[in-house]
Image 1 (cartoon, rainbow, N blue to C red):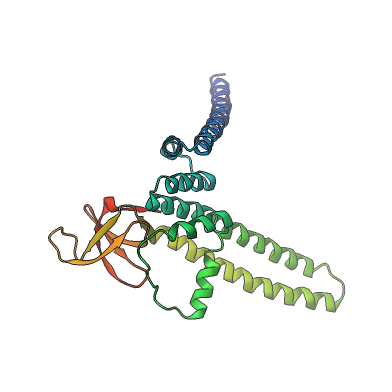
Image 2: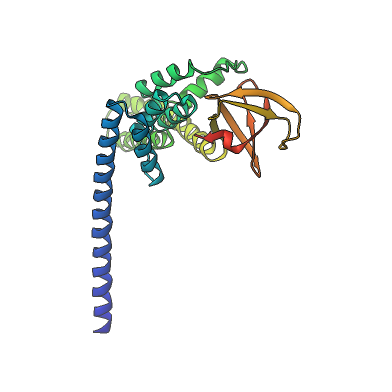
Length: 261
């Protein structure tokens, strides 16, 4: 009887937790939707500071989304903070790499930046690879890989059910093609995951930054960069971050001058 009570209480607790989490999620989603509408109203009325405040509060509460970062980028651009605008457009693009509105506004905001860094030339195959890699997020490549895998399994099963040799040959060649595509998709997924976990980018958020040759305020100056420039974040030491520009230049800046995407 005691065991039955424990099972009953365990079942009751599980059901209670499921209901509590579900209700909390719905309530949170409703609050997010309400705050997004309020921020949008402030934006339409040109009260950009209040819109920014609401969007930033949502981010601090743990909410992330393409629309949130996109709208926050628009708000920052309206108040003249190009660095923060580009930062949030980049965050939106990270979530939705193929969004044309985000791409357009990001390109427009970059016209207001000072630095014009020419990237190091790349072999066309590497450019093709990078373009393909950036076309989906990690989740996107994961779903695509699963889909291709299911197609391959379907072809494998179908091979044993067709009745003619010509149909078997067609499925065999189709399967080999899908297998090659699956191998490519898996490779891209692995590279994408590795990039997300080991390589990070940031944006300069202060008007101008003097980059140092070493992580020391007394170190010699390397070069100067300006608000809105996208950089690679390579290392960190105390309050200093090692950065790399698209043209290969490296140096150290204080971490309050840049923010991670």
